[in-house]
Length: 343
View 1: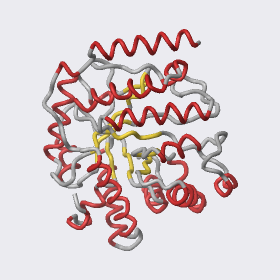
View 2: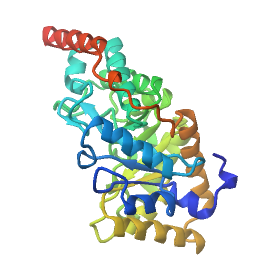
View 3: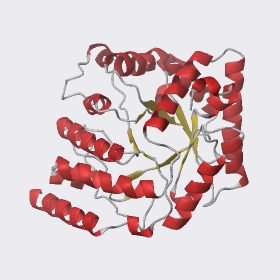
View 4: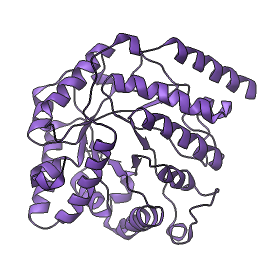
């Protein structure tokens, strides 16, 4: 997976992670993989029928991808009621329950269990943990204590990475321009603090809200936030990821602005015609000089580095015994009991 061996078409394709309809490799999905060289697939509930089917889907998808360009196969499996796969594997408690238990060893261990089972299905990326702090009083968050959010976020990231599942922290908060200029990387009251800590522990990806790229007027702000603050000051070498609403009239404009600001992966939900239009237009923008190829190269290098680091593309044969093991059940019982007592 060396960037020098890739064509421009292959490099541009790597910038996109797509959704699709159905629960098997369709002709449209195969076209996205083999012709447009997309970087990955984000599964939704629609794509999941049962565990063996999902493993088969992952295996076939990787088979059609070029050996040098394996696919990120992603889910959003955050625990509680927020997960792509509903049945057949260990479901983590919600982040709020994990925070109530307040045992970072348990946090890391449950993340390891989830990641190991996901990896048994061929899945190599999880859009978790959520690292919001302020005003985050729902089951989807680690609470409102910024330091606690950071600590449990780090433990979760370590658990995923130990089992070769890329952890994608979500969702980078919008802070004021003044904060960007003056913020300390060690300020435990800042909404960015959990992300600074996640960066220190090599989080694979960070989700950036698409709203930051919908107007040209925000360009200077986003460049300062992503490039100067997170890349240069915090030393982030992972992936910036944003999800685009393809139904919006300015979707292509948003994609172009996101790439210019330093986003590495663009997630495009299900809409085959619009997906291939966006990819083709971005390729055209690079060929005509509207987008600099050097920017594409920097993103692709990061993508290939992460894929190599976490052995993306490798899938073991299906093993039903890999799921919902007795050890995982005992860990869940201990974690929930501790959360109940602590509460």
